[in-house]
Structures are given as structure tokens and as C-alpha cells.
Image (tube, rainbow, N blue to C red; front, side, top):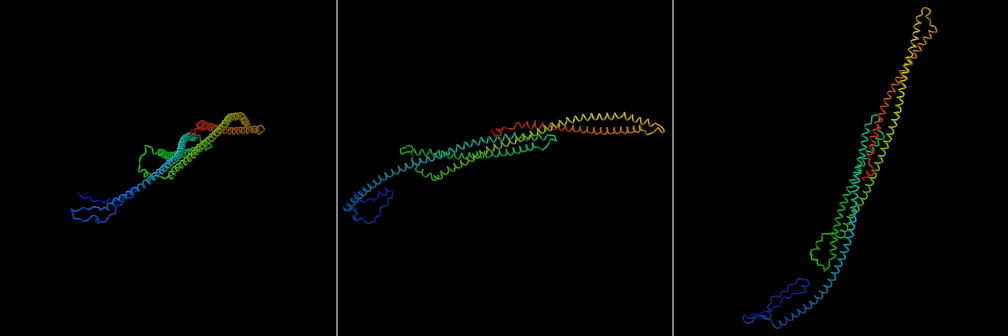
Length: 444
């Protein structure tokens, strides 16, 4: 039968293992021959423990067992206390987390409500600006008719005859109207460009708020789901690395500041939109009023000019009638003068015949007696009368010629005035009746 050698097992401290302390290797005893192990000759006896070693060995085992028993009771007490404390801490921490999630839900709901309010306001501003943009475009289109009317009036008035082709008040007002309409068109185009730019800014800001609102909506649902989790919830799982996934996110201050900056940007755009809408209203109102005032000024100038033409034409027609009457009278005067000159022929022949016959007297009978002197005086008087009548006839014919020239000039001027009046009243003023109404100029 083989001999057995009793060797004590190495001692490991189980408390160190329970506490997470790495076990230490047992001390290495020096390689010294055991007292009970003699160097007996081979085949006579094997190495054995002595009775004292045997008693020491199991007493050590008992002592070690008692120590382990006490240590186990202490560990159990500490484990129970630790379990109770950890349960209390866990419940407190979980309750605090649930409360903080509730507070977070309130914060998200508040900022989401603010975002929703400004999103709705921006949407209303965008719709209002689109309506005003349409009004501006219609108002700009409405200015084309007054511009065409004013330029057509200027073109028509260039066809007036030379005497009436003057740079009058009507032309000045028409040029003012053309310049005014050009300036108004440029202003409406600039205002429309501002409205388009503001609409784009509002849409960009609204999109930014909607993205923030969408993120908060998703975060609200996620936090609401988290707040509903309980220890008895069946849909909870272990996610060991979930805490490490949020190293790159923002802190509460930057989170709040991000939304506040978005809301500040939205309020700035809302204020800019309000100011721009008021500007558009003033622009449309002022441009419409200015165009209507200038239109009234042009119409008044046309009316005054037509009155002047009518008055001038009436005066010319009256003068023309007088000239015609004077021409008739002058023609009758010429006929009378010619008749008077003709009537002097017979007395002249008589007196000249008398003088000729008396010149036939001879010798002393050829005397300058009173009849001779009377006949000579009569002849001179008749010649003087004829000469005077001929001079008067020449003046009468000259006057008649001047009257004819005046008649032709008056008739030409009357035709000129009639043509100008036709252009001013029938051409220009008739077209000006198609001037847009106030509502059309307002862009409605």
C-alpha cells in the first residue's frame, strides 16, 4: 500500500475576493526538511505527520472556519445594510430623475409653445407679405396706363400747328406726370424687391423654428416615454453604453440660448415685417395720392387750355365777322369812289370843252375875263377832286388788301385753333378719361 503525505492547502482570503481586492499569492516557505520527515532508508518507512502536527492542523482548520464564519456574518450584515441603502438611494435617484424629466417636459412644452406661436405669426406675416407683393405688382401694372396716356398726350400735342406749338402749362404738367410715374415705378419695384427679400428671410426663419420645434416635439415624446418607464415596465432593456453616447451634446444653458436666439431672430423678422408692411401701405397710399393729384393738375391745365382756345377761337370768329363786314363795306366804298371818279368825267369834259371853245376867240376877245378864270378854277378843282378820289381809291384798295390778308390770317388761325382744340379736347382729354381709379392704383 502506497504511503500518503498530508500537505496543508494554501490559504486564500475570501473576504478580499468579495470586496474586489485581487488575491495575493501565499508566502513561499523555504525549502526546509519537515521535522517529521526523516531520511529513513528506502523500504523501511514513509514521511508522516506527528500527532502534534495532526492536532495543530485541525485546530487551525477550526480556527480558520470560525474566522470565516464571523467574517461571513459581518459581510451579510454589511450586504443587507448596503442593499437597503442602495435601494433607498436608487428610489430617491429614480424619483428625482422622474421629477427632473417632468420639469424638462414643462420646459420643452413652454419653448415649443413659444416656437409654435412665432411660427404661426411668421406664417401669417408671409401670407400678408405675399398679398402686399401682389398689390405692389398690380399697382405697378396699373401705372402703365397713366404712363401710356401721358406719353400719348405729349406725342399728340406735337402735331399741333406751328402757332399753337407752345411750351405751355399743359406740357409742363404732362412732363411732371411722366417723371412722377417713372419715379413711382422705380419706387414700387424697389419696394417689391424688399418684400420678396423679407419673405425669403421669414421663410428661412420659419424653417429654422420649425426644425427646432420638430426637435423639441421629438424630444418631448422621448422624455415623456422616459417619464412613463417604471421598474415594472416590460419594455425596458439594458443599454450599458447609453451614457457614453451623450458626450457631444450641449448643456442646458446653450440649449436654452439656442432657442432664445431663434426666437430673437423671429421677433426681429416679425418687427421688420411689421415695419415693411407699414412702409408698403404708405408707399401705395402716397404714390396713389401723388398720381391722382398730378392727374387732376394735368386735367385742370387741359381744361384751362381748352377754355383759352375756345375763347381765342370765339374772338377770332367775331373778328372774322367784323373783317368780312369791313371787306364788304370797303368794296362798296371802292365802287363808290370809282363811281365818283367816273362822275367827274362829264364835268371835266364840259369845262375843258368850254375852255377849248373860248380859246378860239380872236384878238382882244381872247381875254381872261371872270368866266375864263372861273372855268380855269373849275378845271383845277375837278382835277384836284379826281386826284383826291384816286388817292382815296388807292387807300381803299390797300385797305381792302390788308383786310383780305387779315381775313385769311384769321381764318388760318381759326382753323389752327380748331385743330388744336380737337387735339386737346377730343384726343387728349378723351383718353385721359381712361385713367385708372383709386382702387386700381391701390393694387386691388
